[in-house]
Length: 309
Image (cartoon, rainbow, N blue to C red; front, side, top):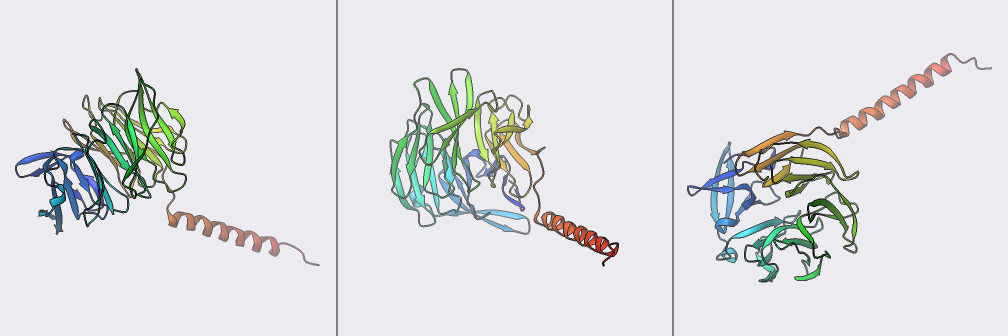
């Protein structure tokens, strides 16, 4: 296995543990960095010890996770204080971290889990089922809030909350016959705001950049696109990045406009995005300084060549 010290979310597609390869989508990292990893398929927690480019995994006591069975979805809250697991059997569990106090335990949350995500403020959890349904959960109250509305011929599959900290939204992929769209819902009333056809093919995974500016979609045949959230337009299209293989996960680099995508067949692929560069703090100050110097020169030139009476 391999980690990039500059980006905790960049993990190689497979981790070798106990002579068994574990796919990337079954691995969950704590938001604090290289400290904790949860391997759902093995129902185990591990602490990462990172020293001089050597990484060791030390098994950690996780009695609350014993015998929970195979898990389909894993999610940590942004602040790292809550994490949720959704099983193949449809069982939803939400814990407080690190005490592992159970906040919600619902054995019949879904038929079987498809996807899940926790909102930026850690107040809500959204989960989708393999039968096309989706539910919103109130984490602090430990209870379901509502089911997202859909018609009988609609399937809600992937889901992600916005991350920009301004007006909160929920992004979901919606399948209706052969039509596949990305829909946006308001968190204030959970009503649909609009739809957009971003990647016109079945979607296998969604991801939102840490600053909330970009939304990435991976397809089941190996294509990937990155959309500008504000405009809801495709900014970068990557065709055949995982040729013929479903993209299992996409992660954004926290410091650069780079994404890493993984699949079972092709492993990990790193792509530099062709999107407008962000303004750095020093660049903004440089513009201000240039304006100030230019104004001072013009002011001096004007008064030097003006005949005062």
